[in-house]
Image (cartoon, rainbow, N blue to C red; front, side):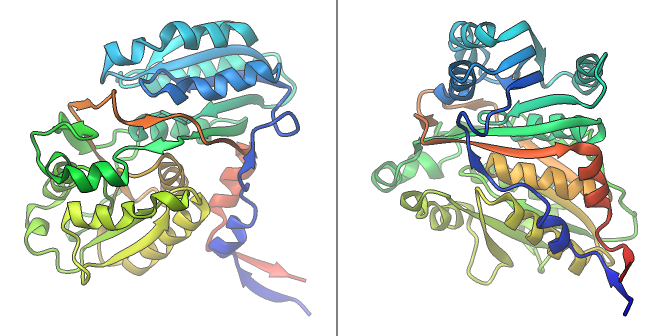
Amino acid sequence: MSRLRTTLVEDVLAKLPEACKLDDASAPRHVDLFLCALGFEPRCLSVPKELGRLAVKVSHGCYLEPSTNRSDNRANLPALTGYLEGFCTSLGSLQSDDLEFPERLRQLVISAGKGRSGPAVVALDISVLANRALMRVLKVLLESDVDLTVAYAEAEVYHPTREEYRDHPEVWRSENALGLERGVADVGPSREYPGQHLDPLPDFLILFPSFRADRTRAIIARVDLSLRTVPAGKVVWLIGVPHLRDNRWRADAMRELNGISATAPQYDVSTFEYKEVLQRLHAIHGEHEQEFNITVSPLGSKLQALATALFCYMHPDVRVMFAIPKEYNAARYSQGCAAMWLFGFGNTASLRQSLESVGSLWIEE
C-alpha cells in the first residue's frame, strides 16, 4: 500500500560516506585535480607523500597558500612541491584568502573537466586547511559537477598536551600569550555564506569554540554585543569531543577556557564524525529557524567545518562568521600523523540532490 513519506536528514546521512583508511585499496588511481594546503604543520606533507608512494596519477596539482604565517608555511614548500611534482603532471598554486580565490578555483575546476565524458575527479586534502579556506573551497566544489574525494591526515599530537595545559595555565588563558594562536586580525561574515537574514528577527548563534576565548568573544560581539552579557539561550555551544581517546580531556578544557557554564545551552559533538555534527546542526536549525536569524561560527576541527559546509548548503539562510587570528604558533600546533583517511563523496550533482531533498515529500510504494 502506498504512503506519503518525508525525507529525513537521517535518510541523507545514510548515503554520505564513512571514513576509510587511505591505502592502496581505497586510493583513486587517477585524479584530474588535487588540492591541498601549504601549511606550517608537518602533516601538510602526509597525504601528498602517501599519494606518491601509492603511485596515484594526478593531471594537475594545486596547493593553497593562506595569508597567515607565510614564512612558517613556506618552510615546507620545497618538500611539498617535491612530493607533488612526483605524481602531478602539472603544478600551480592559489592564494586562499584572496578576494578572487573562489572564481579562480572555479575556473581551475572547469579546466580539469574539459575533454572528459564524465565529471572531473577532484581530491581535496583538508588536513591543514584553515576552516575559512576549507569552506570557501567546498562552496565551489559543491556547486560544481565533480567526483569528489576528501582526504584528512589526523595529527598524532595536538597542542596543548594535557601536561602543557596543566603546568602553564596562564599561556592558554591570557590574551597576550601566544598559546596556539594570538589575537584577532579580522572578524566578520563569510562572503561565500552571507545567509538570508530578516531584519526583524533577533540573532541566534551556533558556536564551535576554539582554544582562544578572545576569538569566541569577538564572534559573539560581532553578532550581537548583548549576547556577551545576556545570552538568554540565544548562543548554543558545540563542544568538540576528540576522536583520539587520550585527547578527550580537551572538551572540558574548552569549556573552562571559554567560560561555558553547565547551564549554558551546549552539546558535545565529535571532532571526527562529521555526520553526527551535521545531524546536530540540522536539529538546532529546525528548532530555531522560525524565530531567529541563525549564524554559525565553525572554529573547531576540520571535519566539523566539513559538516558545516554541508549544513549551509542544506540551509542557505544560515550566515557563517569567522574570527581570523593574527598569527598561529607554528612551533607548537601539532606533531606527527596518526592516520590518514578518505571520504568518497562521489558525484556532487547527486550529493546536492540528496542534501536538497531533506524535508521533501515522496510516495513510498
